Image (cartoon, rainbow, N blue to C red; front, top):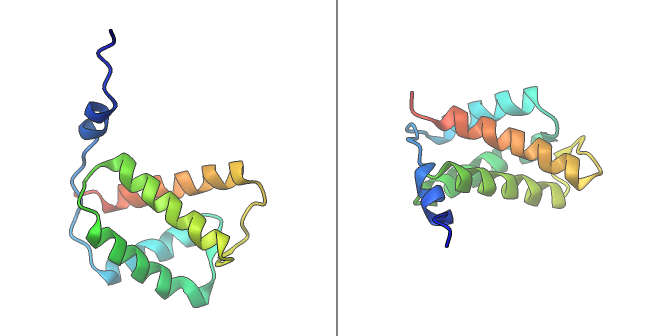
Length: 112
């Protein structure tokens, strides 16, 4: 019988997050969307940042994998509604782009 446990693996990837507020979230996403493609439509930027802030306040875990999955899912949700610009037509490419962006978000939220 194997000793592998997915739940232990999940619990092992916990990280410490810095304190963040809505203004820090806005600055972080402004930098990320300036550097990466796709970009959020300007009229949706404040809504996106507010949604992320509310989501982040409500996530009771410090698990890096869960955060990356939620961020990626949020990006897909905004893309499905047409709020992202210059998105790739292929979902495999989008998945890679969103995964990279989620990893960057998590790294920027880490406590120093």
